[in-house]
Length: 399
Image (cartoon, rainbow, N blue to C red; front, side, top):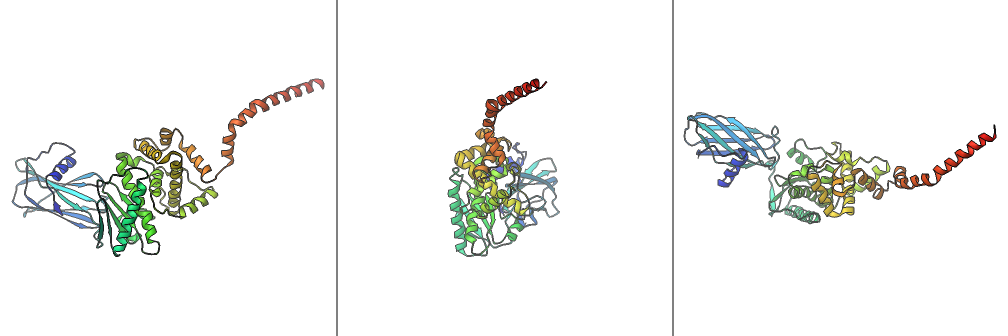
C-alpha cells in the first residue's frame, strides 16, 4: 500500500464524486492500510490519529480496470479504527487491478472531511514473481530462469511489430505481461473464464495474462499467445471507448493475425469443417464464441481466415476502417455495408468460394442468374410463344 499525493486526490475527487465539486473543506489525519488475500478479498483499514465525533463515515473504492466506483458505509470503533473487507469474487475484481480508495467523514456538526487517497494493486500473490524489461513492455513470470523471461520479451516485441502493420500503437502507458506456468494456474486467477481460455487481456489496466507451459513448444506458445493478447490491448487503446462494439470475429481475427506463428491446426480444422459443410455463419460469431472447446477453436480459425481475406481485399487500412465503423455503434451485419458498400453475407459467401473453394450449386446459379434471365427473354419466352401458336393451330386442324 502507498499513500498518494495531490494529483491522485484530485483524480479521486473527480472520479469518485462523478465530477461534482468536492464538498469537504478539510482533510482528516488518518493512517491507511490495505492487505490482499488473492482470490478472496482486499481488506481496507483506517485509523484516526485523533478522536473525532462522527455522524457517519463512508469508504469510496474505485476499480481502475472496470471504471466502477463502490461506496460503502463504515464504522469506527472506540479506538478510532475501521476495517472493511472488499470481496474479490462478488465484485468481479480482476488480477493486477489497481484500487484507489479514500474515506469521507461527516462530523457531528455536519462538516465533511476526507482522508488522503490510497492505492493498492490486487496482485496474484500466490507466486513469487520475477520481472524483466522496461516500459512499455514488462514481463513477469515464476518457476523458470531468466532465459524464459527474455524469450517472452522477444515474443512480445515481435508481436509489437505485427501490430504496427495495422496501426501505430499507443505505448504511452506500460503493458504488464504475466506468464502462468499452467492453464490451471491461469484459471485460478480468472474465475469464470472459459475452460479453453489460455490468455486474457485487460486493456483498461494494461495487463495481459497467458499460460505458457514448459516443454518443446514453449517458444511457439509464447509467439502465439503473447502477441494475440497484446493486439487486444493495443487495438482497444487505438479505437477507444467503442472497442467492445467490434464483433468478436473481428477482434479475435485481428488478434490472431498478430500472432508470430499462428496455430497450424487452424487451417486443418477449417478445411475439415468446410469439407463437411460444418462452418458457422459469421453472423453467429458477432457477439461471442461458444463455451465448447471444439466450437470455440473453429470460431477462432474462421475469424482469422475471414479477417485475413478482408485484409487481402481491402488492406490493413480497410480493416481499421471497418473496426472504427463498428466502434461508432453500427451493428454487426451493417458494418461492412457502411465501410465497404458490401453486405456481411456477400463477403462471407465470397470468402467461402475464394478461400475455401466452396463453389456450391447455389453460388454458381447466383453467378449465372443475369445470363439465365437474358436467355429466358431472348430465346425461351419467344420459343414458348411459338410452341403455343403451333399447338393452337394443330388443335384447329383436327376439328
